[in-house]
Image (tube, rainbow over all chains, first blue to last red):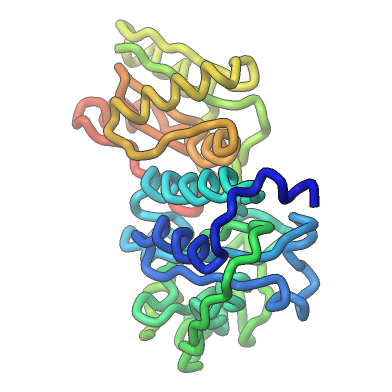
Amino acid sequence: MKSNLGKIFKGLSQISHDVTQFLSSFYKVGIAIAADFEDISNHPKNLMLDFESAIVYVSSNSSGQMGVFDNYFEVIASQNDVVDYLTKLGYKAEVIDGSSDEISLVTAGVKTGIGDISPVNSLVVKGIGLTGAIGVILTNAPLEKMELDGKTCTNCMKCLKVCPIREEANAKGNLDNCACGKCVNICPV
Amino acid sequence: MNITIYDTNKESSGCGCSCSCNSESAFSRDDLIRDLEAKAQNSEVKSIIIEDQNRQELISDLNDIFKSNNERITVNKSTLDFTLSKILPLIVVDGKIRCANSIPDADELLEAEKSDSRVIMKSSCC
């Protein structure tokens, strides 16, 4: 009860809408809720005890550099806008770094319905294939889930055929040797 | 030239960023300062370690830098740590951002200054 005192009243539907507007420069934005993560071991609650929602956003990366957003400072600015906005409403909001061991950004992307998991364990997004760079913000604001259909991967296995670290679909592989970008370039989605 | 390197004392991976990318290209802040002193002798190189800074002053300094570089980004208390994790090491030459999130070699940095551009972010960085 006490933690709610500082919260400025605003409808959750409006907050969810505002958050996606702050991130409108991204190719796709999705929101997943706590219940979406119940079947996985690295639940966002490990990072934020009162976690309610994950905001996930993805952008195509035309530079070809894996995991790097093209407009670096603008990306940080958009994320800061969301954190600022939610904080001012009295909620917690935390941007999750791609190097986090506690939560998989790809899993979060799948849970929001932004995309699908590929045979090489990266996120396939309709229209940009495997070129997407993903970002995640966790919050204790109970946002409205966005209903997106992430089923995208055609299972053509082209990415797996060129992958130097995996012989079987969704095998873990030695990630220290994962930076060739061949899968990114060959994905037809 | 006035070259300012904003950095942290936290351990970083080989390329100078703060993720675990395990990049093999390893230029340390000390390497860069040494090379700049040799290659750009009329320059003043200042290293600012953010742990030693007053947070409010740091926020103000960063916002001034972003504004003068026409970047929309602003920082405040709630976004400072995240922003620092993404931009450090940050190299500013005569007020212009020339490199973020990694330590370049001196030639890359001087070329960016000469061509009024920024050092391209390295592959595999966070």
